[in-house]
Length: 169
Image (tube, rainbow, N blue to C red; front, side, top):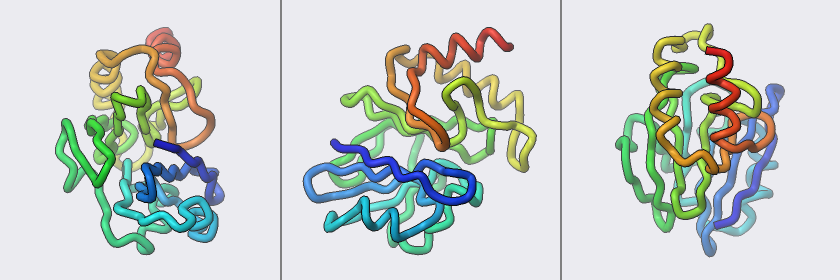
């Protein structure tokens, strides 16, 4: 699997295009369909996954036919074409936030749940600090060496972020 990160929109949202063979899965198409299409190239888009419904993560949703989100992905194992991943419900930043864990690749796409050196804000509509604490507790059961792909900023390592978060609780 290859991963292309496209930084889009005024809030510099990370949109990801995952590819296996000639098939692509888009995660969080925030804005700028031309940049996203350039990353897609001639691959067949088999779906678009939304980690949560904040405007900066869904700006180009209208350009995709098959949308996957908390409403049609079950918590646990899911498969879309050649992509198999675990969905983890992680409310806190927003009530509909999900993470996607690709165990075989040891990577996790987390939307605005966790960032390098921080967590998602809980003071926006749909946010809840108690749910965030529960979600952090849930995610702490996963392997510490997972590479985390956040909705903004640089990739990081789950264990490093959990240590940082736990120092502040």
